[in-house]
Length: 259
Image 1: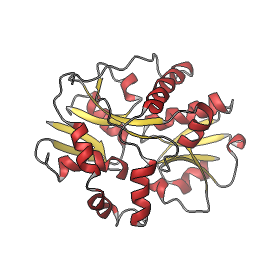
Image 2: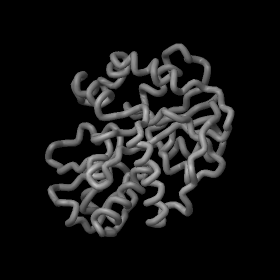
Image 3: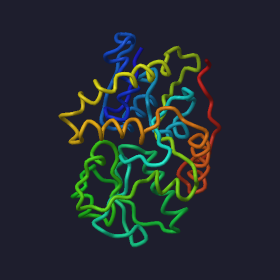
Image 4: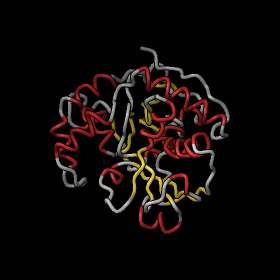
């Protein structure tokens, strides 16, 4: 069995069990620093399951979603943000997009078009905030680099914006597979991972310059690993708005893996 996920800290509780815990050896885990690459592996059926941006469900045919496990946020995510050198978002004429997560790219376009009635120039860019802001008024930054962004930048949390205008939470990624009868206990893996946060935080201490208590707060209070009803409704609305703004061809209802 082969599974894939990004190496961001917010995925660690979902894969810890396969790397170090009771499920070690039950699946080969392929890690990458870009969620979009996990989606590419799944699209090519080079892995049995992948933790991928939710927009992948609408762009890759014949997928099934593992229910009740996700990377999302109810109020504030901290690690997916729009960054400027001081400008308000209403003053933005161009946005440099970190294309590592297509879900976040689509969410950014929805926010500008639906909530701000604007459509700035979109520029695909490698995730380097300094060079991004040299070529655009605003930068979409995702993952661990967004957590430790210098205070010289002005930072707008995408989930805070989404929550303000919709009153819903947001789901960024879920486990998906092409096999409806896939038998991997991703729920149990999540639960085991969340009991080993000390080990997870220690693993990232050299990579992310956050104090241990800040990292714990991020993984327990900002990130939600089980979608609540608000997040589920937010996902439905996200798909609907993505179709409205031409970001996907259709908003297919979600088909789940059989339990």
